[in-house]
Image 1 (spheres, rainbow, N blue to C red):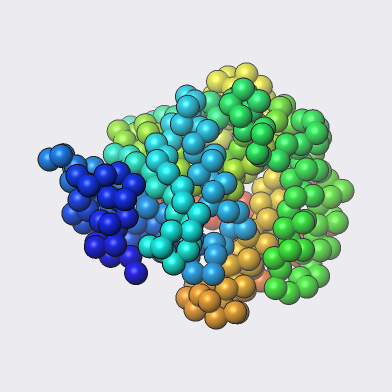
Image 2 (cartoon, one colour):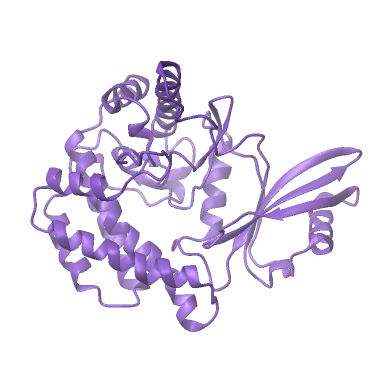
Length: 350
């Protein structure tokens, strides 16, 4: 059981006897993994940490927690802003054997108050924030994956032209490993998407996999830490813009992309961006459906697992069924219309 006493004992074991846990708070919803904010007293000063562990029965995303830890650890030595990773433990007693990752807490918030205020000043602020995000993605996407050590443990495409094919093959394997139902429409959609795989990636980049509003830590309209790395992969940087959580609707999308391209030193193929917008819908099905398995086995009885792993999955499958056979740019417009950004009041398309 995770409580003040158990956390106190755990942190003292890892950091020494002068550390005392004074309070903690679990963040919600925490459906895939459980995250606790932990505050300590250390020699008269207050410290802050993030304690992260798998939910009962395993995470929703079919990716080990250790992988996320290794990504953050590798990034901490680069110009990409991330929280300082402190340790990973595969099977500690405090969680009854579920893996644990601990990182230092970053001063900031994933919320930007007043972001959607009216007026020219607020509009200019939104564009600046979009540019800030673009610069951080450019820093990530231009990392040397050999020099930083990521190529040693991240699956690497054979070449930039093979980025989409490598991601397609990887997720097809995951789909066959984790699915709880046949999903015939998803299989049909996969064959349709395979016919349109892009071959124009500008380079092989470390991609975040899920980024944008609600995913990063901000302070004074600057990103102080990029968070949520469990879906990180090596591939086409256009993919990160396909699932950038409303970033391309904060201001002028083309201005934001051009700002990114100037910082990165290469261009994003807009037709590839269309493909990845549709591909991200497909990838959501095995990702969410994986979380249904512990619910079906009784290991994790939380109803959101059922809602996401079956109900939400069926919506995605139906959406893909509507798009099969259409031109990719038309399918991407359907996605943009269907997937409204939840981060702005008027629900502009993401």
